Length: 185
Image (cartoon, one colour):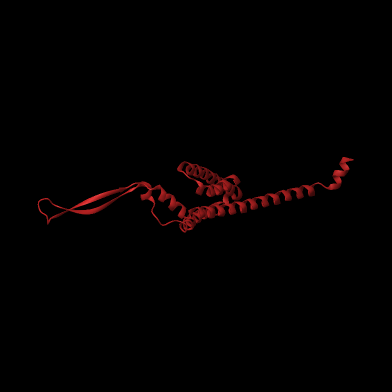
């Protein structure tokens, strides 16, 4: 579970560094695998902890997923560049109306269009990519995930330490110290 949480949060930090589509696809596959493992294990752990009374706790966990899915785009939208870059990626065509005079009658103008194709402009896409502050949104979301991972890990370790301390104190209380000394003689 810890590996899934750490992998999901670290992949958020790696996404802005992806320079091509294949590296982005690989990072998203790793992130999806980590999040899937985390989701399945969290569901299983909650079912083990609460047994038949699991309903409200599963609903609360899935409500938190919904809240995260609702809030994340709001965080990211503050960092988006409000510019449509698709014409610079695909290229575009400009059509302008033009009026040509007819050969038979000079006063009669016939409408026509002139098309001008603009090729893709990757240098503009590169410039807009660096003008955007979108990597900061991924760093914020990754930082929130790291914080949640650290807090959950702390709670789990604290619970385990308390369990082991309780077990060791019960074991030492169950066997009187004097009886061990008498048996060893």
